[in-house]
Length: 366
Image (cartoon, rainbow, N blue to C red; front, side, top):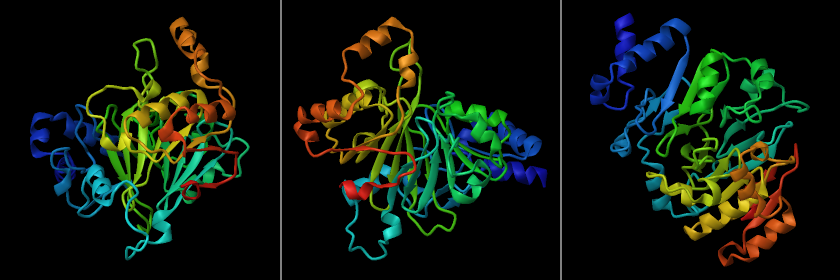
């Protein structure tokens, strides 16, 4: 029976060749499953293979349906996120399509708690709690597993990885999705259900609601803050509704695709440049990112600024970083809106200043 477990897990690696060339795959899974009883998932990225059953980048369009222990799945006959959006067009399927329910079009965001990156994203019927800091919130850490489909931690920095909140959760019941660095921290906490999006463009996972009544949601990894050697290296993420193609971008420090969206790392997914909405903690960073995306053809419908003052990047004492930030706009709505007027392609982009505990329907900003 033990050998059957190992063989079953082995089939979840991206290709048979990867298994033969990387025997460490068997060791890693055996250690996690047998020693800890945990169910860890490693979503593919540069130089990594998948223990989740997602197909390799060269054969993902032929992947068969697979339901993982953590509730992440490759939808039946699903093709890549890129082909899904290209076939449906940027704005997705027509509302008149058969079976195109209101639930599958759902796109709401609500800031919760006290953290600069603590918010709820409801997309296509999937409810995701991002970087939760639930101090002072009506949402209780002890019931997170009942209220949300997933908890997503995008950074290991204390501003976004609030240990006091996470420690109060029922760690054996919550389904976690995490960046590579945050995943390392969660592994130390012995969580039971964990999916890690590996660093570097190319990492992606698929999410579905518990009853699978909504749309499948793809999450893609892209470069974030830290383009220079002296800067923190972070991951950015794109949430894509595979039913209608709507795409939401987020990076914890506001530097989505690097400062000014100017990252030149190879392999950045096409969806990273086709986002409809940008969630940011800082309008100074968002101005540069919006401009950079516009230059690459993006047509942003809205920029959503999370509540709170200051940016953790302000704490960086490196003089080069301080000099770089000194010549930007202020983190104020009027400054940001003025910057939009300088870009004709951003003239119709809306600015939404989110308030804690007030849900906002992103579809209403279109």
